[in-house]
Length: 82
Image 1: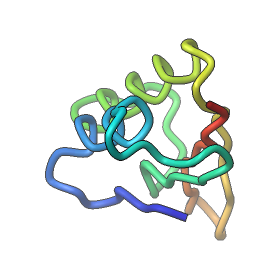
Image 2: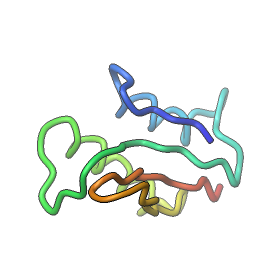
Image 3: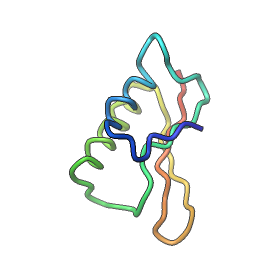
């Protein structure tokens, strides 16, 4: 599993990890792109990261899912499909 939690530019590294031809994540690779509370209407950097995850899903490149660690502690993850 790759984690971009806490990275200074998570949107760019997330996009590059899935779409970059030189160093793409392998099919089946799991990427943790956010960790924290559940949020119905994210904003700020969290919204930008979630929007990039959604774009990658809409492109058919990843499947999104959550992993629950405990009460209000979730990992937001994706599995690379292509």
